[in-house]
Amino acid sequence: MGIHRASLPESLIPVTPAGRDGLAALLERPERAVVALDFDGTLAPIVADPEQARAHPDAVPALARLAPLIGSVAVVTGRPAGVAVRYGGFAGVKGLESLVVLGHYGAERWDAVTGTVRAPAPHPGVAAVQAELPGVLERNGTWHGTWIEDKGRAIAVHTRRAADPQAAYEALEGPLRELADRHGLIVEPGRMVLELRPPGVDKGVALAEYLREAGAETVLYAGDDLGDLAAFGAVERLRADGVAGVLVCSGSAEVTELAKRADLVVEGPAGVVGLLAALADALKTA
Image 1: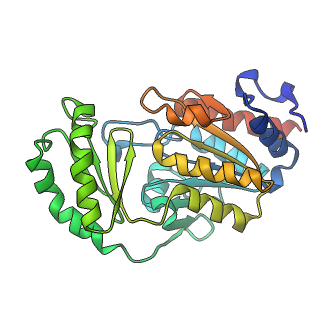
Image 2: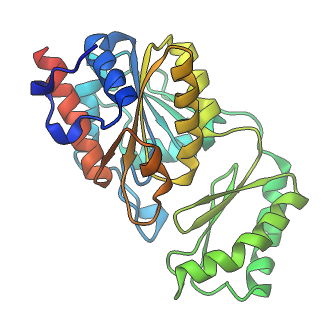
């Protein structure tokens, strides 16, 4: 199986044999392929205030061109599904009529075809953590500059705006793990953020379930942060079962673990958008 290299820039050809096979399968049988993408850091640039995060201005146009040419497109995010839809500008876009957003690591699902979110009841530990968290931050001297994000089914503590973001992150990691343990939650580390959320759901589980539902033969997954490692692991396991896969890292200096396991590293959200547009161009001319 080979890639028609003339259809893609050399910089967008995976460096690994498995990645090249996955890309070739996507280009040759796009109707059986799923393109799945993280949101923050992948489709949207990382910003100091997560509430100000928005998709790269070229992301939706690129997705709208690509989506009708492949089996399906899914956004897999730790954000609430409805928030990702709003910040991404995904609703009501021509070409994205079949888009699916798997929010809260797959605990929530938004379908463009219905415009509704499906979700189970919140874990009771989230409310308990929310009540105790301000006291934990104050006792550990990390209240100033940190920011608590109520995600509905999870609580995230951001340190990016602290005077020393890394020091605040390290000071909080142990106490937040203890707090999470007391209330039956886990801590998901990320780029200057520690998220307390229910166990049993992650991007790998969400992605694998969606691929089974879609009957996918090929998957391209793009992510940037530690939470995406579970999705990378799911694709690696699926490869052993005959599903072709391409692992793409939206590169940054803050997290390097994904780059080590990726088939292709691109320069942040702009690079991811460039890849999506190049795939659409290649499939249009195939």
